[in-house]
Length: 367
Image 1 (cartoon, rainbow, N blue to C red):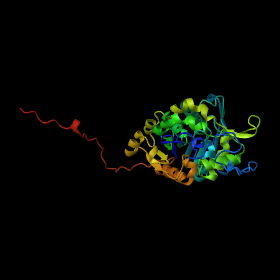
Image 2: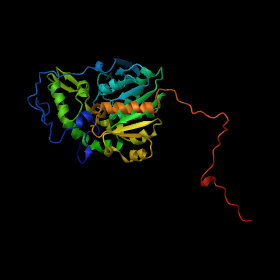
Image 3: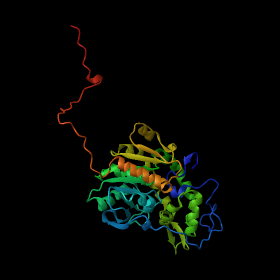
Image 4: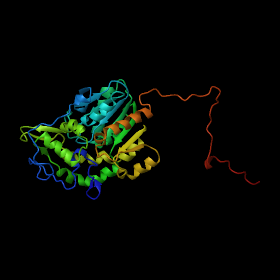
């Protein structure tokens, strides 16, 4: 979906900014949100997916140096690690269906980033790219650093930016791949002037989870109902005393505005500069900026398009996303012994051959 002079409205905040044409969420906080059927039974609790249907373990990692306790969800017990960072407003449970699809062959670790989900820090509002990337590295080090587990870092939207910045720190010595899902510097920066208006047009609360699910369905926020049942509840909190029992967003996205530009500025060059195999997954080629278009033509990363998906590609198309990840890890033998190229026993030492104008022999001067 595009709006506001052709800028994709879901290019920055997937779960918050996708408002379909003709549907308004004005009059926010009302018991009946515009565009949602008025006959929804608000007293009926919807079926909510449990984390342990998809993950094998959840763990809270206390990091004094990072000033908080970080929630991670883990699936699988063998193989390389797929380390997943969610987008702004989401939580680690956004990766639930991916975890179920890959855990027989690899391990998947999904982090609730600072200010999101069940992670609690002394400063939940510090969502700068520096802080978030250092958080991600610190959690990896605490959980996987001792074994130096071969790792592919995967990020969606804001998480894709943080995955890239984390990789540029070169603090994960066993990093073997980078996968970024539906975030491009040019598109994200072009969206920034419109984000405040988009955020002001979303409902700040819901009278029930059922209404929240219906809003997500009608707004096109999530096209996969199974993904929504496990992911959406983790993005909300029930504020009994403060807001009359209403469900409010866990992450106050409007307070993250000072950090938006820092997430994305310089991202394309940073992505291309990471010295590991890379994949960029997009919902459409219209999101590519000039730098990445040139980089893709030069073969500097693999581009995968999933035009049937919305912004949350991994939720909308979990089977296809998992297939891309599995193929990527297998193609580059992530976590497997590298196969040496045999050299014939009688082969001599290969010497470099000088070539090109700089090495051409100058013609003899006339005598």
